[in-house]
Length: 370
Image 1 (cartoon, rainbow, N blue to C red):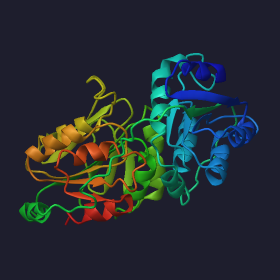
Image 2 (image 1 turned 90 degrees about the horizontal axis):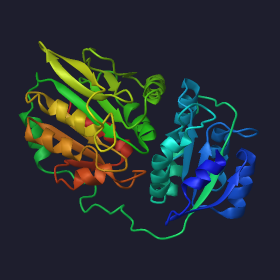
Image 3 (image 1 turned 180 degrees about the vertical axis):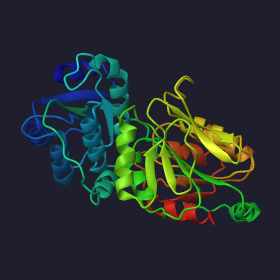
């Protein structure tokens, strides 16, 4: 597997593989010797597993780390623990722990390594310092050390509308009927598990709205994410299920592989999961699909939140939301984003009402609820 991953970068113009390591202990030694810009590391490795090695790396020599993980329940839990302890992203190994089909994720892995050079190590370390550690990991397999060999334009452009509150937000809130239905929609990607933990755990159990969440993740991981957040939160957090009726005080996370939509049943709203509509911008679930689905209900007041993540998912859906009914849009500020891609795209639509740091998002949401 180490050879396969090394071969993925043969001929790559921006990435050079400078070394490989047999296990977590060897990885620590090689990182010190070779000073790589990025590390890919298996969750499961002998002698020192991926999670323990990650914790030590982030303490001694923090740098962007991309985890490789099996899609088992234990693998998903270990991966989420790794993300919350400083890993920037992960790739699921097809075919289990020892994957003979790793070539199927070549494009995804290469892309994530190339993007990892834009990640702020200071933010990774800062966010990982206070994380709760609830799961343990198994033992096992592969570590790769990579170095960027050419500079690239920094796409993390500082927004001119830093921490700005647009004047019409108070007017929008005044237009909201006290009896109208309120729905909170949250979209995120890279860095999302930690950002969601920061936001969802601050929401009170008495919140008078359901929360719909799209986190870019494959099948199997979203259920573990929901269980993890549910254990830490005052509200109920669960993986969304087909036909469920939305309830205030409950957060529904779109399952990996399914777009999350809604349909009206009498005065209530029912969840629809769609595995047939193609991925949007490479994602299923997609934030754009969720936002567009909710936008069709003009008499519902919406709060749309876009947090850390690569790409532009959510910006087109935000346009649809703003065109129908009352919508407050909140974007995570560049200061706390692991990757300022999705929020940046949203801000550039000029439809974002508030730009706030991640630890202020829950408070911003509650301002617009009864």
